[in-house]
Length: 169
Image (cartoon, rainbow, N blue to C red; front, side):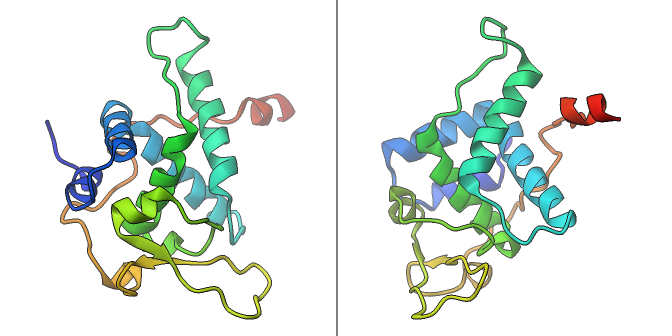
């Protein structure tokens, strides 16, 4: 079995049943992480400065289910909402340039991965989202880094245009 950045992140994290569920799901469906990161990057390339992990998670569920077919198809799978905060933290850790572009709330994933939310400022600027940092206060980009960086596309995800885009053209 080939080791990836998520395997390295999990190996350095505190054991927890939600972490094991996240890791198992990632090993079975590495295309989910690729899809999430590629959609975030696409949104940023389109000029948006922020995104919502919550919306993105539901969108990924929608798009990947369409890709695999209706219930009963051989390749269907369930994207559990409890796994979403683990993906959000993993994305911020593996791609620290995306940190602070989505609002996050405290989660058990913080204790497991060793992260925390930065303290909230007394006044917030427009578009402000709290950044994650390592629990010792170190910014994510200056702390632990995987030896095998996450590269989108390795999982072999095939992007097709949205059905709405094809209809409207």
